[in-house]
Amino acid sequence: MGSLSSLLWAFWYILPAYVANASPVLVGGGRPIDGGRTWKDGRRILGDGKTWRGFIGGVAIGTITGLVQYFITPDFYGDLGTAVLLAFLLSLGALLGDLIGSFFKRRANLPRGAPAIGLDQLGFLIAALALAYPVKTLDSGQIIFLLVVSPFVHWGANYFAYKMGWKSVPW
Ligand code: CTP
Ligand code: MG
Ligand code: K
Image (cartoon, rainbow, N blue to C red):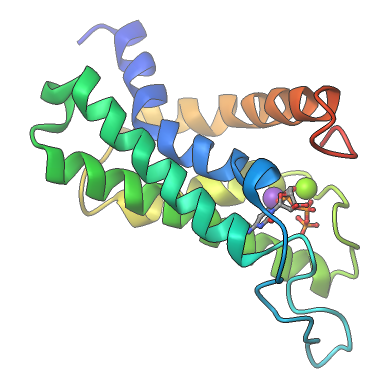
């Protein structure tokens, strides 16, 4: 496999995590996962930006992404079950990583929507890679590539969502 195609495969592999992470902006809202409860420090556990609808919708849309990917490149996955399980784990990891990020942001007294450089762009990615690891893995060069480019993809996607009026801040 040439190096360019190896990097493109890395993008293809991680796509469900990107989709899962971006979807809640459109499908989220309603009851927050923490139910409005606070932590020992008196601040919200996760905050109003982390909702059940966003979490479940994001996992569902990310998993469907993997189903579609299977029909485009079946040989990359081997079988449908692997493709769907991989997409589910990437999506679940992305959304869990996002929750963990918000937990730490609230502990650092950052309000909902405040940027946390590094955590916002890479937390979801690292958790997605970790959960998907048992099913299908990338080589270390591909992982480094994703760690380097994902912040730019994240910023680009958020800027686009801001310009579209889906988000109130461009990060
Ligand atoms: N969202 C959601 N449920 C989730 C994740 C996100 O409903 N589990 C929606 C919320 O409307 C959120 C938006 O997607 O405001 C953007 O997500 P994100 O940037 O992760 O949340 P923030 O509002 O920045 O909150 P935090 O400071 O906790 O990161
Ligand atoms: Mg945010
Ligand atoms: K986030």
